[in-house]
Image 1 (cartoon, rainbow, N blue to C red):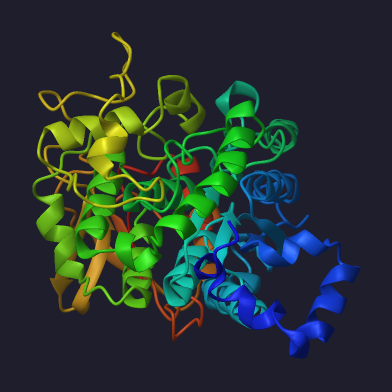
Image 2: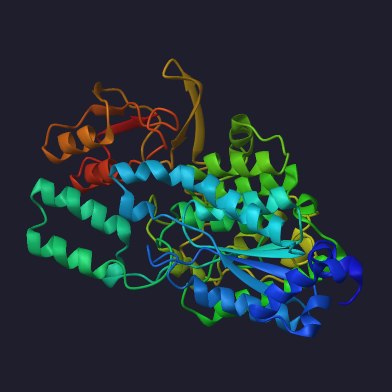
Length: 468
């Protein structure tokens, strides 16, 4: 590992007489003499005690650093910020959420660029910091691996954070009393990890794995598990292998890789936020990806996974039967994935999946191609007078293909939520929330509070919801 070509960036910072001051400062943070001859690996940790999604990531960063050190590198851990969508949801604080994606990407890029890291491991655990990590890695274009912080264990009675939001709606509807609401609140979130359904975090983790930027099943491991610990150590080893082979994000983040990600997201029933984030990630990777690509790929990709919020099962239950690797193998065998795409293992998608076993017989979480939940993808791009440039709808097959009703227009999320909780929204209404988009909000607040309140009130099949 002493070949200077393996230290393309760090040697500029630490080699030679003129860089003695740099070495002096690095000695103070733990560098030994031999460390200056090793490739430096930046470990971008999104740890904070703001949210359970990220509260354990400091420990994962230490494990990734150990893996990199044992493989012949010198790891340097640094932190970046995160905000919690789940905590700020329904408040003005949510306006900072989408903005935080750009801040996180900028901060990782700034630290890695300034310090001269030869490789990078980023560890994300919540909605916006995950695409932000990939955006930064694409900009820097240095050998890089993404590690997902992992999903949360189920709460009591298979609850998750959405159970709490829906309980608020049920409380307003009179079907849940104060004591029951408090019991749900106290038992839904048992510890570290990202929200336990196919919400944005698990969706983006799956998309990033399908892109080839994380190791096998990094997206399908519980936050507190031996599998996740091994994932971190192996990421440390993998980034050194990428440096040796000079495999960079630009070699992985191709148009075909993004098509793989869209395919997997459709098969899993993933979040509509995948559209927003994959477009941003592709932009940083200089890949031309457009809204219509989601339609084109969706028409050939069936929805196969019966996972919350639109389905029945939790991410932890998908993990128990093998995660997303068997699904990717099925999609590859069906000709729906590009098998030649390079990945952070140093091997192609097809090579990685060659020996993957299928799901166990009798499982009901991931259906076969002959019995899909929906024959085409659930991410539907709509055009019309309300959205001439395009809109994204999540149509899983349970909602029907047409809804006609009376528009109930609100000029903020708060006003819409209050009307729902007060019983002003009835079956047949179309709730329209204006001035909440990326510019109008600003920040593109997610409407989980009002939509969950609609579900909690028992109006999920009878009310449509549109927002900018």
